[in-house]
Length: 408
Image 1 (cartoon, helix red, strand yellow):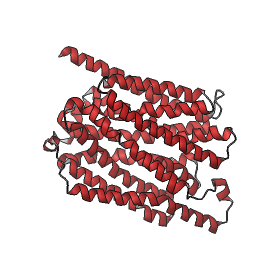
Image 2 (cartoon, rainbow, N blue to C red):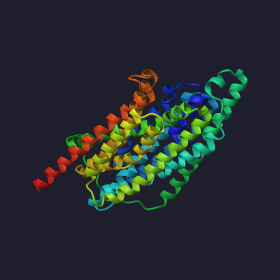
Image 3 (cartoon, rainbow, N blue to C red):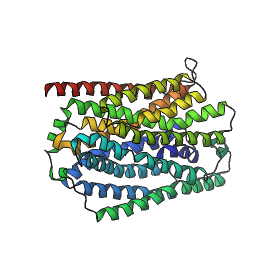
Image 4 (tube, rainbow, N blue to C red):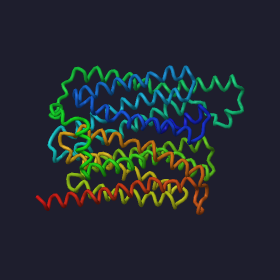
């Protein structure tokens, strides 16, 4: 839901694209900073304790939206987002590593892909909630129109819009509490709950010595940055396409949101399809193939104008679907008893979602019609570079696998 909220924050608080992107920056910063503390907590206690802690922190962060609305300050919302994402970080570290280690090691990459295949369903639900309960109910006036309103009227609309904005989150907060109560009474066990591993510093030293893991975290940073950038700026790209065709801005925003939903549906279907394909193809080969296809699709996004470029951008989501869980799975293969710490490294890699989109936003603002291309098109050179790096990691990991097989 957060990606869709960027444009609403921009409208409510009358701020530009770069300032509204702080929602995304703070979102992924919370993921990054909480990852290793969450891993340490889970190592000391259990996966179940980590999941319960994550749900509790999420709920606290979400209910902080209520005093944030009362204050009316943009930065109050950012702080609430930060607390919420610290909880999400706990959930990510606990759940991903739990799924990866719960079963036959040979099927671990397929298993994490299957588990992650359900994530887009949640993303689609979030986008539906953003469209149904925020987009349709928020005041339609744009920033320029709001700036012309009397102060008292502007404050009334702002307060109303903030109320609309937080309602879906409060609902999700209640769901988090209900989930925590249910999980509290279920048995959640894992063989790695009995493996405390080495000390934190020693564990970090050991996993950083593993080249495949070290490069995997770097690849994950660039992948997540590319994913967030593509999903954040598909709206701006589509609005540009539709307004160039003569649509009013309000109509263009609605049409753009539909393409965003289509991209997510494609992403979801592709994840389930990739889970089946992993039974027949090596994960390194599939990761490299999809990275190449994503790069080619983004070349179409950059150099094609109109709907053809938009269609290419939608297709990128299909090629992204495999990447996060597969990079995660490949890089954890040699981490042994330090898997909980290693999993935290990948959650920490979500900082890419804070680093890459602002660079792309800067290109949109400063490089208008450079080399005869719209700045929105040109900005997608940033995720293109990211996918090239992912492809290089897949190629190098495949070489490591081949060398290991030959040695054995």
